[in-house]
Length: 117
Length: 113
Image (cartoon, rainbow over all chains, first blue to last red; front, side, top):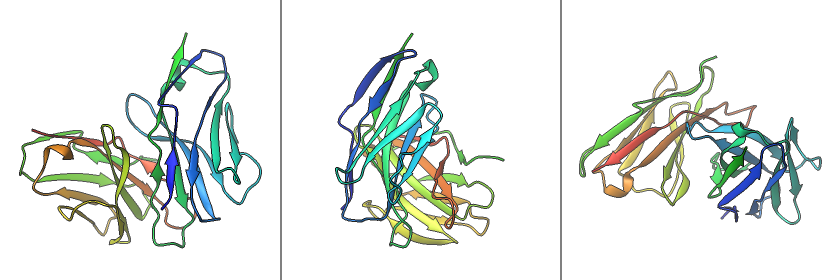
């Protein structure tokens, strides 16, 4: 069974600084997707960034980038120039590529990010 | 474009009662997913509906059930409520083919007393 592990329950960063959130996963599949979702205190989950396992290039979305290490099964999120609005719970998630029996997301336990002014 | 909507926002029930939660997907999305976010347990997959059929369910007892209507909206029913069913229930929708992104609704906070 696939699992996703986030070993940092809480993190803190100063405004304008850079922070990296860690995520590891376990799967025997070779074709899958990895995601980082953000859940602000208002609780609506928002997709931050997505990585296809078959792509070697790390995904980037503005201030957000990932370090995808497929062999190590590691998928960390780097937030550059942190802003107060980045404060939220961040979830790492795994999804097997469609074609299997399931389309579900498997989530880690989340990392609560605080941004200090 | 309207996002995923869920109703009600909050729901308070007593143990043994039934709860019904509703979800409207983004227009054009045929897949609807339900997740439970319970304190200390993280986000757990509950159910996946596509084209009106249940495609997959998570490790939850049969008293968690649902359905998807012809307009692709969905209903989650929880029978014989237990205290541990208290949680935030999130609905998400996606295109079954094409985009792999699941778009989430704001959730329904279910409290069982």
